[in-house]
Length: 611
Image (cartoon, rainbow, N blue to C red):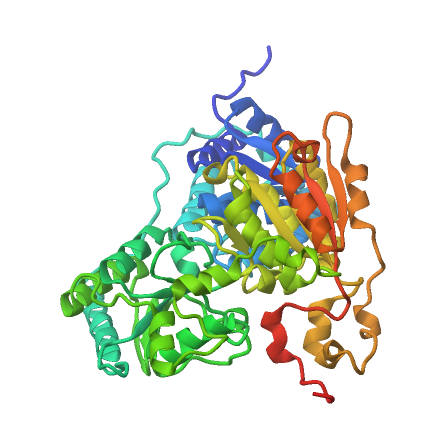
């Protein structure tokens, strides 16, 4: 007599809970310990398994998916897979991304054999808690599932923590538990928000009043207040783009974003004044944000080295509302929820200054008060127009440059293509170069604090599969050194038929940003004449990798461009739906001069001795 199949198993329970969270794709690399779960996942039919070449790539895809969708998941096998996934989980923890890491581990029987006679089987460590201990450092909850009766509670606890705290969690499940019976999910998972008490209301009121006082105490030359909002990453993580739009529309207050919050709302809003990134900002943005605005209101913005671009601190004329509290000048108000601060601040500013009472074009005002200057825009419209130029301007140039590429791409995205695009930018020069592209809401992804090179290639997979960006083509910008870390993730793009375009910024095969940080004299064209030996890469023909990953049924294209006319020709092909290049992913080797760098990094380069 055969045993009957249980109505619910641990594997099915977890599959049902992931589907309940709206997860449509699970990324990972399989192993024998994970097999039973993947079989149950397919049987349920709600979640598609996406096998990736590397565990790191699975984590990058899940990270990007979660940034767009609200939660993502990756599944790997014990130790060898889990430790490869760790980097992605660490990045998600630092950048507040809700990622579920599932680690299938050896069965209970094998652990008992080890305890009894010291027998180690594949992937096991003599430290039974080695995987768990490591993941405790980069998650808000880490659980080992070793008892089927306790599985539902532990799974629910971890998933609830993930969506409530918006950070990664870890589930380690023993292989022989996947098929063990357990109760079906009963009550739905519920996000647990922090309570809002009378004490919180009093703290919120005090924080709002302090912001109003700061604004009043910093008037412009005409006596009117001149604040500017700095919209940051937590607006994206907490889904507060709508609240930001309401605040700037009701008050008229001008705003910039951080690099990490780029495109959290549409960048064609009349109040949008650009991306502020410290000394790496566009000079016009830096001028209005630091010199013309008289106080700065950071909403969900992180004071990371990348967001502050060479600056080490904020001043006493700043508000910084992030990480669960609000600092106003030298005062601090703990336990103030950002979701409540935005509407409260909106109401207070409207009451104090009237509807749209803070409306201003800071570019035009600065131009009017400080006098005409060739390099100062006479208004916001002129500043925006300066970012987007036609291809004809660069056709006569002999070589492509970082700035020339991004200026040309900006015109392509705004004027020439009918496709919807998600720009996924890697760390270093790619991120600095792409931050001034003009994009619609949700059209930009990057790591802003963890900055794991190569992140963008795997992340593009998750960006393309997130339901909210369905149909949008990923456009990736990645350095040649970073691409060498994760190039195999192009295989996933090809396998799934993603029509990604991956621009590999090849500056002569060396780590450009590392050279900039260690010996920026290289970029003066003087000593040292060559990059430091440890920054030199083996040269690749990156575009030829497309032929490696392509097949008859899964096309991919490779293109090399070195001159503006060649980039123009490629963009014309990308804009033509009938062109075969659009049938699958495209790897574009962008060949750049060795001493070139984005203009935003000029503050790091010493002035030439001959100048």
